[in-house]
Amino acid sequence: MLQGSREQCRIYKEELGKILNVGVPIALQETTVQISFLVVNSVINQMGLMPSAGYGIAQKIVSFIMLVPSSIMQSVSAFVAQNIGAGKKNRAWKGFYTAIITGCSVGIIIFMVGFFGGGVLSSFFTNDSEVIAQSAAYLKGFSADCILTCVLFSSIGYFNGCGKSIPVMIQGITSAFCIRIPVSIIMSRLPETSLTYVGMATPITTVYGIIFFMICFWRLNKKAAK
Image (tube, rainbow, N blue to C red; front, top):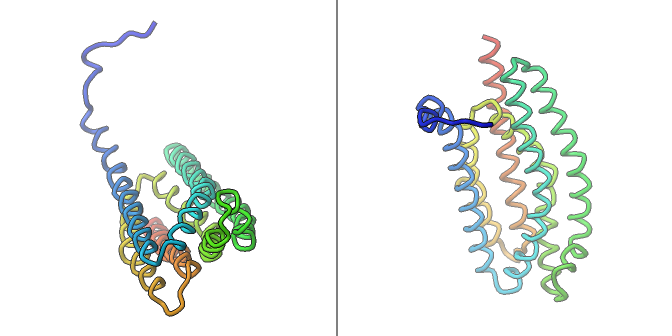
């Protein structure tokens, strides 16, 4: 039988500090990313009714696609945290690399489906041919992110697992406000633009995130070597 006492029902300042130190930066990162997508949605709404409708359909598909890298990120975070805590850094690295290889392998298949079969996927949600065409156009520009995000999310999972969430926060904020939003606005205002160009803003943002974490890994390894 479980027994509890009043003394156990209290906040431990040291543990709370550790939780907030990791959790607050992650919360800020997620918040800024979602805000940036709201801004992108507003930008696309200004392009007209059909692009807006097509983007809405495409986002339903994207939400399903993102389950793969999101699951990888959570798995890497838990795996790395367990192994770092046990002092097995090499095993944590092996798990990180395995996650990238596995995720990218699946990502290549999803990329092919999204790039060449975006119209077929969109047809499950609407019968309007013009909306299907707009949705397929967005997926064509976005589809490269199916591969790239597996690398980015694995990196995010690794840093979260190590308890180093500050780089994750910085990457999330800078990518949202310095890359995704400006690139989306620029793409939407190009002559004879389409949702394909706007969709490319997401993989471009992911490339920035990968480069950012490559620098972080380099500095981390350099610091460990010293």
